[in-house]
Length: 337
Ligand code: KG4
Ligand code: ZN
Image (cartoon, rainbow, N blue to C red; front, side, top):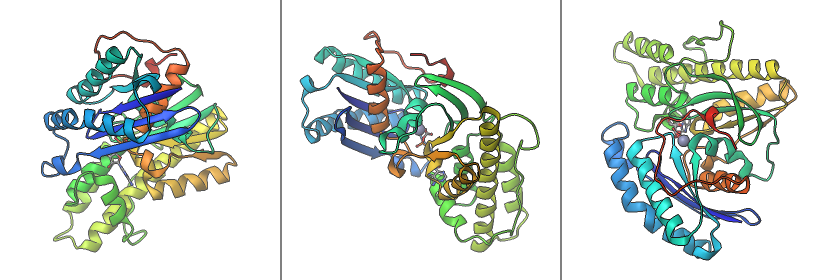
């Protein structure tokens, strides 16, 4: 079975072809970073317009690279939400038009389920049940995953997502967009212990997160320094990153202890962060449980994860009409099989 996946939920156009026997056959990604960078963040209208330009030619290239024609494709997966409505509409419209023309099913994929399943595209795949930590630009979710399609919410961010906090701190420090990799890079030059930032909500029971106060704390620390040097900025980046990573570690440990789950799956853009990976590797070693991450290039948005999730949904008998319908807001827990 072979599925083409189309990701257009935000500022990356991703198209990929995944085959359940041969694996990933083609995988193309176009990032709009340059287009949005002068605005310091994603401009939704520009994002939609660029997806319109890129999607069909990329589909054509992906079919060529995977040596597939319409008759080889069993389904057209696309990101149906959550995300920017105009951007989602581009992928959904193209996918449904292809489904109609090729007489094949279209499969609307939940973007966060795509992230969640990205570690399954590696040789050493996680088995259910596991705890999933999904940390992206739009979401911070801790989930108890019983099986494919059965994800129970343990906790989430009450305000900024982890990636969003990285992006905002990057802006304060005068680093570019997207900020996560830039903050992580700057943090490498920090002097350990120069600052100690709070670990929000770790003294309270439960699994929810809040990163907005930490962002304000970071802003105030920076504002208190007259003419901050590069070293000051690096120290702030380091203390901020350490606080985010440690907060996440505390909540993951709590979720693993509470549920007795044997493994942790970490995915989404922030799962590329090496400080986070080091901390979680340590935690899981101490707890004698396993941790799984996607390959680095499948941490951030990509078409491969949508093709893979679409293939799994198609195998599970997912069907839908040709009506074009996207869900800019869509809780992952609403998913069923
Ligand atoms: O999953 P993703 O590509 O898009 C969403 O679904 O939101 O995640 C993008 C987010 C951005 O906020 C970006 O700054 C963050 O992931 N990110 C990182 C790193 N790489 C990407 N944050 C921290 N460290 C990184 N290395
Ligand atoms: Zn994403």
